[in-house]
Amino acid sequence: MCTFPFSMPAAPAYFAQLFKPTVADDMRKALVPSAATPTLRRRVVRGFTLIEVMIVVAIVAILAAIAIPSYRDYILRGQLVDATTLLSTFRGNMERYFQDNRTYAATGAFNPPCALAIPVAQRTQGNFVVSCAGADVAANTYTLTATGSGATAGFVYTVDQQDNRTTTVGASWPTPVPNTCWVLKRGQAC
Image 1 (cartoon, one colour):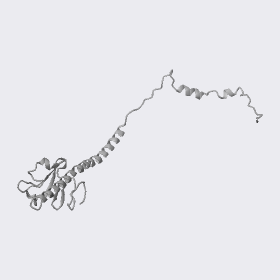
Image 2 (tube, rainbow, N blue to C red):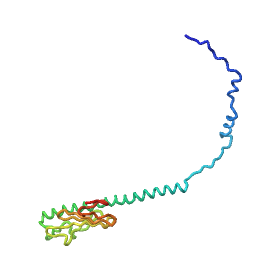
Image 3 (tube, one colour):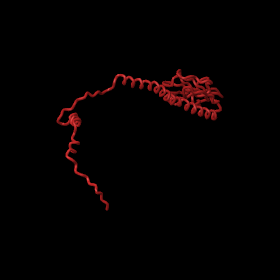
Image 4 (cartoon, helix red, strand yellow):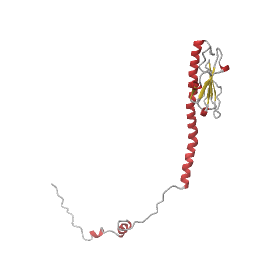
């Protein structure tokens, strides 16, 4: 085992004075509040400034100006599908009627599936009502029309025996050119 001949001498007496707390340390202790000393009260500011509130309102208004029209178009597009579904169903029913009767017109006690004699409740889906009354039904031709009401007012979809489709759109949507399809969203082209 190896030992070093070096040993540490005892600390001199003045060494303890070197580590005596200074005046700055005493002042720091005086500034720290304790249970015995009253705390320094600071005024705490809470709330928002008028400019901060105005900025938030402006941001919400911009987001609403973008989101609300998009949401309305989204809801309207969902309602327009009722017209196309209804017309497709009635077109299939008209073709079955033709196969049974060899005519699209009423024969005796039999009426075509979209005739006015059929109750409106059976010709309605969502906001659309299908009709093909009067001159729209002949022996070899027909034109089915789905007319919107309520939120879909102004929208009219048509289809004939040769599956020619047209759309009359509401005032806020542009009419497609050429008008040879069922328009289901704003700006859709045929």
